[in-house]
Amino acid sequence: MGRYFPLVWKNASRNRRRSLLTISSLALSLCLLGLMMAIYHALYLSETDPAQALRLFTRNRVSITLPMPAFYLQRILAVGGVKQAMEFQWFGGAYKDARDPKNFFARFGIDPNKIFTLYAEMRMPEDQKKAFQSERTACIVGRRLAEKHNFRLGDRITLQGNIYPMALELVVRGIYDNELDPESLYFHWEYVRQAMPGRDQLSAISILADSPDSVPRIIHAVDEQFRNATVQTRTETERAFGLSFLHMMGNVKLILFSICAAVTFTIMLVSANTMAMSVRERVREIGILKTLGFRPSAILGIILSEAMLIALMGGIASYFLARALCGVIRSGPAFSSELMTLTIRPQVALVMQLAAVMIAFVSSFVPAWSAARINILEALRRTD
Image (cartoon, rainbow, N blue to C red; front, side, top):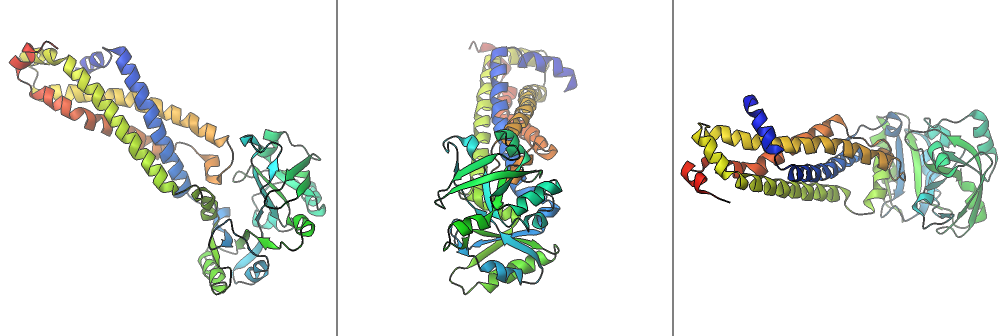
C-alpha cells in the first residue's frame, strides 16, 4: 500500500475541517481512555515499593470509619514477626476555609518515637526530628505540602476538629521528604489523648513486618486474635489500605471500566460516521478508480488506510494530552500515593495507539467494504 500513500493522504486532507474535528474528537476521547488505563495501572498493576511491602494496617473489619479499642496496639506488638506498630489516627478537621479544596490534606496522629522506624524512607534533619519528638504540640509536614501552603519552621497551624471537637494548635518543627507521601501532616496523638480522656480509640494501627515472608502470617495472626472480639479487625497491606479510602466512593474498578467502555463506543461512532460520509461523497470517484483498473482489494486498503491515518494522528495527539493531564493530577491533592507518580507508561501508550488502529479498522470496514464491492455503472450513476 506504500505506493498509494499520496492518494491516501490527499483523501484524508481533502476536507481539512472535518478531518481536524475528527482528529480532535479522537484525541480527546483516547486521552480520557489512556488516562483511565493509566490510573487503573497505577492503582492495581504497578509494582509495590519495597518499603510499602513491609507495612500493614489493621482497622475495624466493618468499615474504616469505625474505631477500634486502643489496647489492640499492645496485643498486635506481641504477634510474631511484628517489628514495630503504632497508632495511625485520622484527625480530619478543617484548616482555614474547609470549602477550599486546596486546604484539604491528610492529618494523622502518630507516635513520634516510632514513625521514623515504620517509615524509614521519610528523610528529615536530625535536629528537626528531635524537636518534633520532644514537643507535645509539634508537627511535621511533607515538603510538597509546605511549598503549597508556604509553611516554615516555627509556623503555627490551627486545625478545627470535627471528629474530635477541639482546636488543635500545632507548631511546625520539621519538613520531611518522602516521594510516597509528600503532602501529609503528622502530630503527636498523645496530644489529643490527653486533651480528650475517655475517647481512647483508634481508626487504624500501622504495622511493620520484619520480612516480606512474615506479612501473610501477621495478617492471619492479627485477625485471628480478634475473631471472637466485640470489634473484629481487618489487616491488609498498605496499598490495600490506601485503596480502601478510594473505594468509599464506590466500585473504582467498575467505574474505570465503564468509562473506558463508554469512551470506546463513542469513538467508534464518531469514526464510523466520518468514514461513511467520506465514502458517500466519493462514490463516483471510486467508480472512476475501478474503471482505471484499481482492484477492489486496493480500494478497500486505501479507505482503511485513510481511516487508520486519521486515527493514528488522533492517537499521537491523545498521548501528549494524557501526559499533561497526568501532570495536573500529580499536582492535585494526594488522595493516593500511587497517583503521586501517575504517568503514561509505555505499555499504556502502546495500548492507546492499538486502540486507535482497532477502532479505525472496525468503524471503517463496513463503508470500505461496500465501496470496494460497488458496481462500476452504479457508482458512475451516483450524483450525491
